[in-house]
Image (cartoon, rainbow, N blue to C red):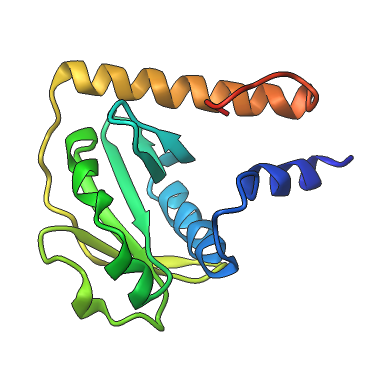
Length: 162
């Protein structure tokens, strides 16, 4: 098993993401990295929800990016409204095939493909409390550490947090 195959296995571990959503996530993560953010995908939140991408900036700013690969995907899912409680900025990421007009104006918008992305609309800032920030930083760090550990020991018992 190669490192690259492990990375791929981690990215599609739960099988819920469509190929389109995975492509949007990849391009979005590349953009966020270029902006100085580190990302964790499919991060469980204190509310019980699972955010598609959580990005952590060097200044402790936390962004959540909800990926929507189609109009039907956006219309069928309203749980994203809860994500605002867990981040400083909330974005949607989508492909060029999805009309930008369907997304709420009080969120940011990223348009992506598998190779790159760009911010079409900046997300308004709404700073989270210190306690929420601490909780998110711990969740982010724990998930990242477990995923890194799984590369070293793929047979380890990492449980639901992985």
